[in-house]
Length: 224
Image (cartoon, rainbow, N blue to C red; front, side):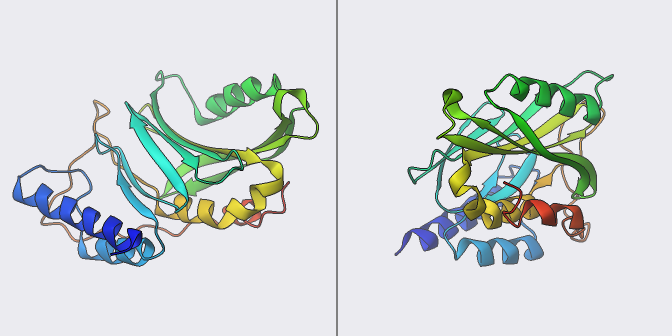
């Protein structure tokens, strides 16, 4: 049995055991989701459900991931220094998406030869988000440019941050994997306390809007 089939089998077993044990996972697979996951997992990708149920997503193949608290850190299996992180952070009620983006940008301005390539607003799963594309030189070495793409969105005072970076020379090769990540990212609806809302088993599957057209310029690999 190859790796893709083992991963697919593990995911389906997880769903079955979750139902049998009465663990109301925030994103229990419905038929539509299961079909999507099966199709994606054939390519060696990994279905991932955040341990508290804040989101579910398909991690592209070629990454080894480790979850610590509310941070998922994935390293490329290649020698291209690629790093993918998904984080959940609490923000104050006064925090706005624009302010988060500004603070994030300020951090990277401290990097050597920092350059903001582009910044735009879009929607992910119907929720407003901002995506940044940036670059800088690793440790000040102009021979080691780093490309960065960051996407962040806010739901109920929770910041969802997707951060990707790698050597700029390899960045274009990750555009399709990033597209798959963005289009399968499903953040949970949150209650007033900021906790994931458990779905009603009797309700029909929810239809999710397609990825915003504004993502296309970032997914062609020609921004760097």
